[in-house]
Length: 383
Image (cartoon, rainbow, N blue to C red; front, top):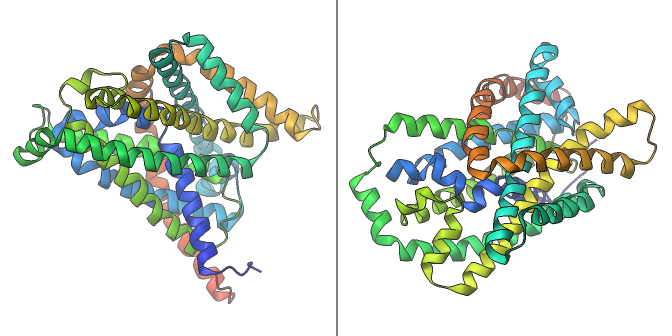
């Protein structure tokens, strides 16, 4: 029997999960502006429209993933893929697993790379010292479980929202003449509009992997209504901020297109030293948030593998081992640099995600959700 919840508590659970999604989305690529520039801003005025369309589809598939996880009580991506792809899970689950591992690897690596570059640029801290600090923080946080992860990511989202609103307001005002002209004239830097649509689709493809981070902390979601609220809140939060940041950066184009840390570049152009400091702090928090979310996803998946071996009885020891291995591997990959990881890494994963995650979740996932809902209705179960 489902636990009775008030409307307020259901809304709070949905909003908390939406902030986890936003915190996962707003990581190395997003908070630095690297993703916005390479997937949207370089296509001119279309960057004011395509982010909303892309995040609508991401919100839909994240909502479907949450409903399936709730219906079947699965909170790790291996179990989830078995439910989604059944009865063909042997083949498709393997592809899903490889796609998830690749994305986790890229997401954590790009966060570590971004943190190292940020600490080097702002404080002069040597790159390897910076990534070591981030690694230690991640290790400390991931061994304590889902409750701490949700709390950390929720507070991170609050700080990000306040800071990004302030930065976006100042940036939009400073670059108003440019971004308004781009939109009015429909300028696209001479690129093919269909290439911009393809890039937006690829953005949906690699953002679909965020479902694994959400599933791993979805224990308190118990009704479809909460999943629906989550999808709505998540779309407004992620789509709104993605579009606003794209438009803001468009006001500093074309110069900003060449930058590794575009938002940091924009703060420098505003001539407000205090804002640069605030943004640097929040950016570091954002980088930690995404790395933390995906590191814990790795822990949630692979600690069970260690448990089955019977070698380690302590949950915290198992989590520590998986966390250390994940962080060490991703730190090694971070030497390739942030832009290479975002453009080449996410672009490649985007194609795989579109075919093997987005399409199945929006088609087969919707069918299974409706089938489960009909069964519950026949049994007289009301959520």
